[in-house]
Image (cartoon, rainbow, N blue to C red):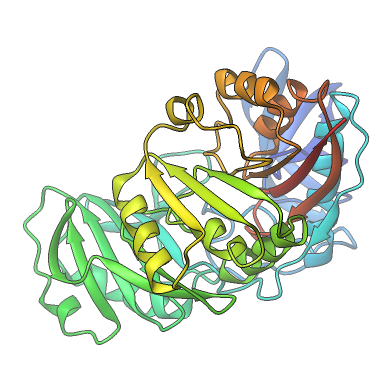
Length: 396
């Protein structure tokens, strides 16, 4: 059946009406006219796939990845880059509107929207190495990924030679083109070909160091970081640099800051140069180990870090901190943490979120005490539907 794509949903799938039923179709752009077949029928909606592109939209471009139509990693590659930014901005506006919050976020683009990722996670099943096919657990074998750093891409072909049958492989790279290879598997591996590659600085198998080092050094905005293999760090060094600068723009030299879910101290280290004091809290021991090392590497005296659960630690923190910074996991904030915020009432909250839905949910419990003063949409994950937001709140 031939349909016209009306718009995209929040996961980048096209929406068309078929006999009055909302139908979701991947790998299309608004105004495409396509011949589709229905693949799944549900009570209130259905799903389809494109058999033939009849009339392409004026917004459509040729995708730059040969795996695009199968891989579930990127959803917007056949969309002009500027259109992907508008799509993300409108998604954020519409999600905020559901809580009667009218916003006009500032878009922060990615100056390097290809080969930007410094980390990828590959699946291995029956010797096939790649990403999951869209909406399935079937492997799409790849030789390279065009949104991933090219040093990583040069390593991917070697992975077929290490005798891995089933498992997971994570590759991380820094600006010096040094790579960590992190493998989880029960297979007996032959790591010799990896050990002889000059770019590979460390190999970790099942959380045990098998070769070289277990960490990487990184530099962002002229500040140095040591990052353990299992510690969180932003996957996009270009946009993360902009993110840190935006956070600094919203602070001053009189601020005492709590950096919650601080990881390796990425934000704490950046803002330490312009605020009075910073205390970072993180539950992952290796991350706090790195954070304390990063404090020392950068010769900072106004920063400290403690390891522990944010909820438990925040309950006992001296209320001298006038700014709280949050960069939580995708699930957002625990309601008990929000209750502590509403009790302590810091003058400013800076909330970094990789999930706009949980961000808006959490803001709903804060808006009687706070107002949104700034909202940014950062293109941290170019050509995917994922959105990074930076929201600044101040006391009413």
